[in-house]
Length: 286
Image (tube, rainbow, N blue to C red; front, side):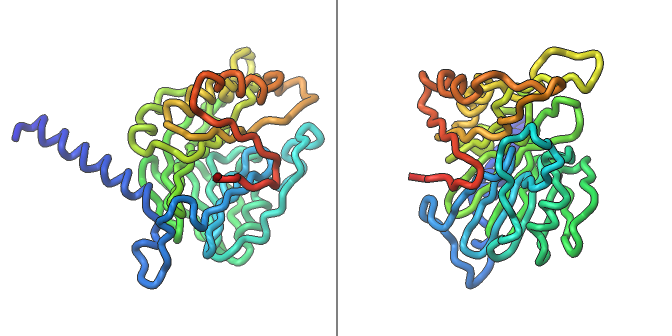
């Protein structure tokens, strides 16, 4: 075998390992724990405020970017803030980055009030750490075994250039993608090849332009609705659940108009289902 063939074989083996890790829960490695092999069995997903979601299986709960702090956006965010202190079983919190609307220290503390794990992308430093919580710095592409969940941080791009990751999470025979507030980048194809297809992609859609950094670029610092559909297409997502929209009345942070309408228009010629759900509602997997 040539050196190039050997390198190619190792690369294929590594991709196979990562895909396998993303597709199984750590419960499969533990004797006496039930593995939810049937599609969707045991997994429920609730949309929280802003970019947050809750993933729940019978013995564990995982939150991504939960938000309960009313000061994060003030009156500009119309979403009701959904409590997160009622986690079922073992509790885990993932964050995509350390901005206060994605790492809400109070929400993390509420979710982990009985202990648990806070996992964050390597290079971020979320503080303060919830009392009694274990903290796990997570390198890109490295699967994190979190009880009944397998979570892998993958590349994302922040509008300010700060460290950020998206998360691929598998549990209960399902696989989802959570995009935080990423903007468009060139890693979508690799993520789709490594981990797709996805049952659902939770993607930001408000295409916000902000004026806090000078000089002002005038460019979207978050996925636009059309870019979100393109990302979902490349990822192989069966459905796109929009997150990270609904702020109004600010001069320094301006969303696109009618983000959900534009999203539905952009998806019209695709097979992707747009599933817009209100904060507090649960995803229907039917």
